Length: 254
Image 1: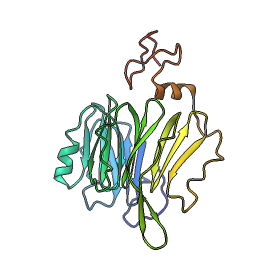
Image 2: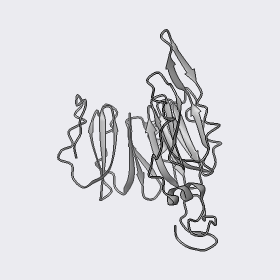
Image 3: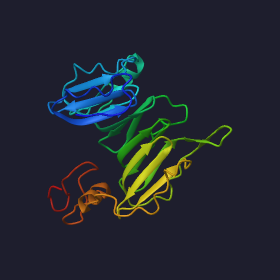
Image 4: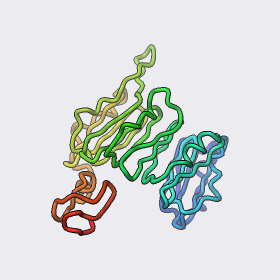
């Protein structure tokens, strides 16, 4: 493992790490998931976010002010000194994906609904009405969800500095279609379309939304498109649930 950048908290001291299969990083924290399901972490530990030594059976990690781990059984653990936050997140069940940014954490459930806990000043945790979600992404004060039909929903705000004061805006993704992947950055949402083009919305002060000329971004395989649309890549039939790989019609595994 190698790392470059600010190392004021020791967050780049990962040269001795071995058997890492997934990583997550924040500005002052680096987290690695090992092949045996354990987790290592270095960097800022003011909130206990490096205290992952006892974790077992982890399949995914997310890092920011707190470290979050998704277990194979669909439960979630967190390295955090905030007892109320820890109690809330460790009560989650049937989670298939996690995202963690700023002071809130988001979990995607197997039934396509989304749970969120943490700071909700800008409504970034208001995901209770979401349905049919297949992917999630969290930014500092927003949460984004990709739906099985290729549309995108978002809650929270993004911030624009106009030279005199900060302005807060809602993300408008209402016109997005055929999206197969999403990402959220600081005051920005990016969507990858099935045809390999990209769409963005958010603060445009540094040209980070200028994706109109992008082509051939991917890989966007037929298999991936079928996965998000919930259809069988062999016969076009419906898959048995949002996260199932088995087709109801032909019975084949996708």
